[in-house]
Image (cartoon, rainbow, N blue to C red; front, side, top):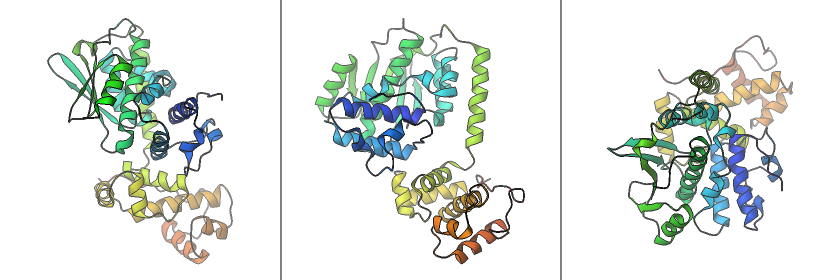
Length: 347
Protein backbone atom coordinates (compact mmCIF):
# COMPACT_ATOMS: atom_id res chain seq x y z
CA UNK A 1 0.00 0.00 0.00
CA UNK A 2 1.33 3.43 -0.94
CA UNK A 3 1.12 5.99 1.85
CA UNK A 4 1.28 9.55 0.61
CA UNK A 5 1.83 12.75 2.58
CA UNK A 6 -0.99 15.24 3.06
CA UNK A 7 -2.57 17.02 6.05
CA UNK A 8 -0.96 16.87 9.49
CA UNK A 9 -3.66 14.82 11.25
CA UNK A 10 -3.87 12.52 8.23
CA UNK A 11 -0.12 11.92 8.44
CA UNK A 12 -0.47 10.90 12.07
CA UNK A 13 -3.31 8.49 11.31
CA UNK A 14 -1.53 7.12 8.25
CA UNK A 15 1.40 6.17 10.46
CA UNK A 16 -0.99 4.23 12.72
CA UNK A 17 -2.43 2.35 9.75
CA UNK A 18 1.10 1.55 8.59
CA UNK A 19 1.93 0.04 11.98
CA UNK A 20 -1.15 -2.17 11.88
CA UNK A 21 -0.26 -3.31 8.37
CA UNK A 22 3.34 -4.10 9.40
CA UNK A 23 1.99 -6.22 12.27
CA UNK A 24 -0.12 -8.23 9.83
CA UNK A 25 -3.41 -6.64 10.91
CA UNK A 26 -6.13 -5.11 8.76
CA UNK A 27 -5.68 -1.30 9.00
CA UNK A 28 -9.46 -0.90 8.86
CA UNK A 29 -9.70 -2.32 12.39
CA UNK A 30 -8.87 1.09 13.87
CA UNK A 31 -11.48 2.91 11.75
CA UNK A 32 -14.48 0.99 13.10
CA UNK A 33 -17.46 3.29 13.84
CA UNK A 34 -15.56 6.39 12.69
CA UNK A 35 -17.38 6.82 9.38
CA UNK A 36 -14.00 6.89 7.59
CA UNK A 37 -12.68 4.32 5.13
CA UNK A 38 -9.00 3.46 4.65
CA UNK A 39 -8.87 5.05 1.20
CA UNK A 40 -10.29 8.30 2.58
CA UNK A 41 -7.28 8.72 4.87
CA UNK A 42 -5.26 9.16 1.68
CA UNK A 43 -7.47 12.01 0.42
CA UNK A 44 -6.11 15.52 1.15
CA UNK A 45 -9.61 16.88 1.78
CA UNK A 46 -10.44 14.33 4.51
CA UNK A 47 -10.49 16.15 7.84
CA UNK A 48 -9.67 14.23 11.01
CA UNK A 49 -10.62 15.90 14.25
CA UNK A 50 -8.84 15.35 17.55
CA UNK A 51 -11.58 13.15 18.97
CA UNK A 52 -11.53 10.96 15.85
CA UNK A 53 -7.77 10.59 16.03
CA UNK A 54 -8.08 9.60 19.69
CA UNK A 55 -10.72 7.00 18.86
CA UNK A 56 -8.59 5.61 16.02
CA UNK A 57 -5.61 5.40 18.37
CA UNK A 58 -7.59 3.61 21.07
CA UNK A 59 -8.88 1.01 18.63
CA UNK A 60 -5.48 0.49 17.01
CA UNK A 61 -3.69 -0.01 20.32
CA UNK A 62 -6.40 -2.41 21.50
CA UNK A 63 -5.71 -4.56 18.42
CA UNK A 64 -1.90 -4.41 18.62
CA UNK A 65 0.25 -6.57 20.92
CA UNK A 66 1.01 -4.71 24.14
CA UNK A 67 4.59 -3.51 23.93
CA UNK A 68 6.66 -0.35 23.83
CA UNK A 69 7.76 1.30 20.62
CA UNK A 70 4.67 1.87 18.50
CA UNK A 71 4.58 5.57 19.33
CA UNK A 72 8.26 5.98 18.46
CA UNK A 73 7.68 4.20 15.15
CA UNK A 74 4.83 6.61 14.44
CA UNK A 75 6.81 9.67 15.55
CA UNK A 76 9.76 8.81 13.32
CA UNK A 77 7.51 9.10 10.25
CA UNK A 78 6.43 12.63 11.22
CA UNK A 79 8.63 15.57 10.34
CA UNK A 80 8.19 19.21 11.30
CA UNK A 81 8.71 20.28 7.69
CA UNK A 82 5.48 18.43 6.82
CA UNK A 83 3.50 20.55 9.27
CA UNK A 84 2.74 23.54 7.08
CA UNK A 85 3.35 27.08 8.24
CA UNK A 86 3.60 25.90 11.89
CA UNK A 87 6.54 23.70 10.97
CA UNK A 88 8.18 26.43 8.91
CA UNK A 89 7.94 28.86 11.83
CA UNK A 90 9.73 26.30 14.01
CA UNK A 91 12.38 25.46 11.43
CA UNK A 92 13.36 29.12 10.96
CA UNK A 93 13.68 29.75 14.73
CA UNK A 94 17.08 31.02 15.94
CA UNK A 95 17.52 28.34 18.62
CA UNK A 96 15.85 25.49 20.51
CA UNK A 97 14.25 27.80 23.08
CA UNK A 98 12.60 29.89 20.36
CA UNK A 99 11.50 26.76 18.51
CA UNK A 100 9.84 25.39 21.65
CA UNK A 101 8.09 28.70 22.35
CA UNK A 102 6.80 28.80 18.78
CA UNK A 103 5.62 25.17 18.90
CA UNK A 104 3.76 25.80 22.18
CA UNK A 105 2.25 29.11 21.16
CA UNK A 106 0.69 27.63 18.02
CA UNK A 107 0.18 24.08 19.27
CA UNK A 108 -3.43 24.04 17.97
CA UNK A 109 -1.96 23.89 14.45
CA UNK A 110 0.24 20.88 15.19
CA UNK A 111 -0.12 17.10 15.25
CA UNK A 112 0.25 17.17 19.04
CA UNK A 113 -2.73 16.14 21.13
CA UNK A 114 -1.10 17.37 24.32
CA UNK A 115 0.34 20.58 25.70
CA UNK A 116 4.05 20.64 26.44
CA UNK A 117 5.43 22.53 29.43
CA UNK A 118 9.06 23.60 29.70
CA UNK A 119 10.69 23.75 33.14
CA UNK A 120 14.25 24.86 33.80
CA UNK A 121 16.37 23.77 36.75
CA UNK A 122 19.95 24.78 37.49
CA UNK A 123 21.38 22.36 34.94
CA UNK A 124 18.43 20.67 33.24
CA UNK A 125 15.50 21.44 30.96
CA UNK A 126 12.38 19.31 31.39
CA UNK A 127 9.75 18.94 28.66
CA UNK A 128 6.59 17.66 30.38
CA UNK A 129 3.47 16.41 28.60
CA UNK A 130 -0.03 17.22 29.87
CA UNK A 131 -2.03 14.07 29.09
CA UNK A 132 -4.76 14.36 31.73
CA UNK A 133 -7.45 15.12 29.10
CA UNK A 134 -6.65 11.97 27.10
CA UNK A 135 -7.68 8.37 27.84
CA UNK A 136 -4.96 6.52 29.81
CA UNK A 137 -4.81 3.75 27.19
CA UNK A 138 -3.02 6.05 24.72
CA UNK A 139 -0.73 7.99 27.12
CA UNK A 140 2.37 5.90 26.45
CA UNK A 141 1.83 6.05 22.69
CA UNK A 142 1.46 9.86 22.69
CA UNK A 143 4.60 10.26 24.80
CA UNK A 144 6.58 7.93 22.56
CA UNK A 145 5.31 9.74 19.46
CA UNK A 146 6.40 13.08 20.86
CA UNK A 147 9.83 11.61 21.66
CA UNK A 148 10.16 10.17 18.12
CA UNK A 149 9.15 13.45 16.46
CA UNK A 150 11.47 15.45 18.74
CA UNK A 151 14.39 13.14 17.96
CA UNK A 152 13.74 13.57 14.24
CA UNK A 153 13.74 17.33 14.68
CA UNK A 154 17.09 17.45 16.49
CA UNK A 155 18.70 15.04 14.04
CA UNK A 156 17.70 17.31 11.16
CA UNK A 157 18.37 20.68 12.79
CA UNK A 158 21.43 20.06 14.97
CA UNK A 159 22.81 16.63 13.99
CA UNK A 160 26.05 17.29 15.85
CA UNK A 161 24.29 17.70 19.23
CA UNK A 162 24.71 14.74 21.57
CA UNK A 163 21.21 13.80 22.70
CA UNK A 164 22.30 10.46 24.15
CA UNK A 165 22.37 11.81 27.70
CA UNK A 166 18.67 12.69 27.68
CA UNK A 167 16.46 10.94 30.21
CA UNK A 168 12.89 9.73 29.70
CA UNK A 169 10.45 9.92 32.59
CA UNK A 170 7.30 7.77 32.73
CA UNK A 171 4.72 7.02 35.43
CA UNK A 172 5.09 3.89 37.52
CA UNK A 173 4.59 1.39 34.68
CA UNK A 174 5.29 -2.28 34.86
CA UNK A 175 9.03 -2.81 34.90
CA UNK A 176 8.78 -4.72 31.61
CA UNK A 177 7.57 -1.59 29.77
CA UNK A 178 10.33 0.55 31.28
CA UNK A 179 12.96 -2.00 30.26
CA UNK A 180 11.55 -2.24 26.73
CA UNK A 181 11.55 1.56 26.33
CA UNK A 182 15.13 1.84 27.60
CA UNK A 183 16.27 -0.89 25.19
CA UNK A 184 14.56 0.76 22.21
CA UNK A 185 15.75 4.32 22.90
CA UNK A 186 19.14 3.68 24.54
CA UNK A 187 18.19 6.33 27.10
CA UNK A 188 17.86 6.07 30.82
CA UNK A 189 14.20 5.66 31.74
CA UNK A 190 13.04 6.57 35.23
CA UNK A 191 9.65 6.44 36.91
CA UNK A 192 7.87 9.36 38.52
CA UNK A 193 4.44 10.20 39.93
CA UNK A 194 4.45 13.47 37.98
CA UNK A 195 3.81 11.85 34.58
CA UNK A 196 5.66 11.80 31.27
CA UNK A 197 8.66 14.02 30.48
CA UNK A 198 11.97 14.30 28.64
CA UNK A 199 14.94 15.67 30.56
CA UNK A 200 18.02 17.10 28.84
CA UNK A 201 20.95 19.36 29.55
CA UNK A 202 19.97 23.02 29.91
CA UNK A 203 22.59 23.89 27.30
CA UNK A 204 20.17 22.49 24.71
CA UNK A 205 17.85 25.50 24.98
CA UNK A 206 20.29 28.05 23.63
CA UNK A 207 21.81 25.77 21.00
CA UNK A 208 21.64 27.74 17.72
CA UNK A 209 20.13 26.51 14.48
CA UNK A 210 22.65 27.00 11.65
CA UNK A 211 20.00 27.92 9.06
CA UNK A 212 18.02 30.36 11.21
CA UNK A 213 16.61 33.41 9.42
CA UNK A 214 15.01 36.09 11.60
CA UNK A 215 13.19 37.83 8.73
CA UNK A 216 11.63 34.64 7.36
CA UNK A 217 10.87 33.44 10.90
CA UNK A 218 8.97 36.67 11.63
CA UNK A 219 7.00 36.18 8.40
CA UNK A 220 5.93 32.66 9.33
CA UNK A 221 4.98 33.78 12.85
CA UNK A 222 2.62 36.34 11.28
CA UNK A 223 1.24 33.60 9.02
CA UNK A 224 0.54 31.39 12.07
CA UNK A 225 -1.22 34.26 13.82
CA UNK A 226 -3.40 34.81 10.76
CA UNK A 227 -4.32 31.14 10.52
CA UNK A 228 -5.39 31.04 14.17
CA UNK A 229 -7.43 34.24 13.82
CA UNK A 230 -9.26 32.86 10.80
CA UNK A 231 -10.09 29.58 12.55
CA UNK A 232 -11.07 30.89 15.97
CA UNK A 233 -14.64 31.76 15.12
CA UNK A 234 -15.89 30.17 18.33
CA UNK A 235 -14.46 29.81 21.83
CA UNK A 236 -12.50 26.61 22.31
CA UNK A 237 -15.12 24.26 23.77
CA UNK A 238 -17.93 25.72 21.68
CA UNK A 239 -15.87 25.01 18.56
CA UNK A 240 -15.29 21.43 19.68
CA UNK A 241 -19.05 20.94 20.06
CA UNK A 242 -19.66 22.42 16.61
CA UNK A 243 -17.00 20.10 15.16
CA UNK A 244 -18.70 17.11 16.84
CA UNK A 245 -22.07 18.03 15.32
CA UNK A 246 -20.73 18.62 11.82
CA UNK A 247 -18.37 15.65 11.73
CA UNK A 248 -20.90 13.16 13.05
CA UNK A 249 -23.89 14.84 11.34
CA UNK A 250 -25.83 14.51 14.59
CA UNK A 251 -27.96 17.64 14.74
CA UNK A 252 -29.77 16.77 17.96
CA UNK A 253 -26.76 15.73 20.04
CA UNK A 254 -26.97 14.58 23.64
CA UNK A 255 -24.80 16.41 26.14
CA UNK A 256 -23.52 13.15 27.74
CA UNK A 257 -22.39 11.87 24.32
CA UNK A 258 -20.57 15.08 23.45
CA UNK A 259 -18.92 15.31 26.88
CA UNK A 260 -17.78 11.69 26.58
CA UNK A 261 -16.26 12.35 23.13
CA UNK A 262 -14.27 15.20 24.65
CA UNK A 263 -13.15 13.00 27.58
CA UNK A 264 -14.75 15.13 30.26
CA UNK A 265 -17.78 14.89 32.52
CA UNK A 266 -21.06 16.65 31.76
CA UNK A 267 -20.48 18.89 34.75
CA UNK A 268 -17.03 19.91 33.52
CA UNK A 269 -18.28 20.66 30.01
CA UNK A 270 -21.16 22.76 31.35
CA UNK A 271 -18.76 24.69 33.57
CA UNK A 272 -16.34 25.39 30.75
CA UNK A 273 -19.15 26.54 28.48
CA UNK A 274 -20.40 28.83 31.24
CA UNK A 275 -16.90 30.30 31.52
CA UNK A 276 -17.05 31.00 27.78
CA UNK A 277 -20.44 32.65 28.22
CA UNK A 278 -22.55 30.08 26.35
CA UNK A 279 -24.83 27.09 26.82
CA UNK A 280 -24.91 23.73 25.10
CA UNK A 281 -28.33 24.34 23.52
CA UNK A 282 -27.22 27.74 22.24
CA UNK A 283 -24.20 26.25 20.46
CA UNK A 284 -26.30 23.46 18.94
CA UNK A 285 -28.86 25.96 17.62
CA UNK A 286 -26.13 28.28 16.34
CA UNK A 287 -24.59 25.38 14.41
CA UNK A 288 -27.91 24.24 12.97
CA UNK A 289 -29.01 27.70 11.89
CA UNK A 290 -25.65 28.54 10.32
CA UNK A 291 -25.74 25.27 8.38
CA UNK A 292 -29.40 25.82 7.44
CA UNK A 293 -28.51 29.16 5.88
CA UNK A 294 -25.71 27.54 3.88
CA UNK A 295 -27.96 24.70 2.68
CA UNK A 296 -30.65 27.15 1.56
CA UNK A 297 -28.33 29.62 -0.15
CA UNK A 298 -25.38 27.59 -1.40
CA UNK A 299 -26.95 24.17 -1.99
CA UNK A 300 -30.37 25.66 -2.88
CA UNK A 301 -32.16 22.83 -1.06
CA UNK A 302 -35.94 23.06 -0.48
CA UNK A 303 -37.08 24.07 3.01
CA UNK A 304 -38.60 20.63 3.66
CA UNK A 305 -35.33 18.89 2.78
CA UNK A 306 -33.30 21.19 5.05
CA UNK A 307 -35.76 20.59 7.89
CA UNK A 308 -35.36 16.82 7.59
CA UNK A 309 -31.57 17.11 7.20
CA UNK A 310 -31.34 19.03 10.48
CA UNK A 311 -33.54 16.59 12.45
CA UNK A 312 -36.70 18.70 12.69
CA UNK A 313 -39.81 16.56 13.06
CA UNK A 314 -41.83 18.87 10.82
CA UNK A 315 -41.03 21.83 8.53
CA UNK A 316 -43.14 24.20 10.63
CA UNK A 317 -40.84 23.75 13.63
CA UNK A 318 -37.81 24.47 11.47
CA UNK A 319 -39.43 27.56 9.92
CA UNK A 320 -40.25 28.97 13.37
CA UNK A 321 -36.72 28.37 14.67
CA UNK A 322 -35.14 29.82 11.52
CA UNK A 323 -37.33 32.93 11.61
CA UNK A 324 -36.58 33.54 15.27
CA UNK A 325 -32.83 33.15 14.69
CA UNK A 326 -32.40 35.10 11.44
CA UNK A 327 -35.40 37.44 11.56
CA UNK A 328 -36.73 36.26 8.19
CA UNK A 329 -38.33 33.07 6.90
CA UNK A 330 -36.25 30.42 5.08
CA UNK A 331 -37.83 31.37 1.74
CA UNK A 332 -37.07 35.08 2.21
CA UNK A 333 -33.42 34.93 3.18
CA UNK A 334 -30.84 36.21 0.71
CA UNK A 335 -27.07 36.01 0.84
CA UNK A 336 -26.69 39.77 1.02
CA UNK A 337 -29.32 40.29 3.69
CA UNK A 338 -27.79 38.91 6.84
CA UNK A 339 -24.21 38.42 8.01
CA UNK A 340 -23.30 35.02 9.40
CA UNK A 341 -23.62 34.90 13.18
CA UNK A 342 -20.76 33.65 15.29
CA UNK A 343 -20.80 33.01 18.99
CA UNK A 344 -18.20 35.20 20.67
CA UNK A 345 -16.19 34.60 23.84
CA UNK A 346 -17.61 36.05 27.03
CA UNK A 347 -16.32 39.53 27.72
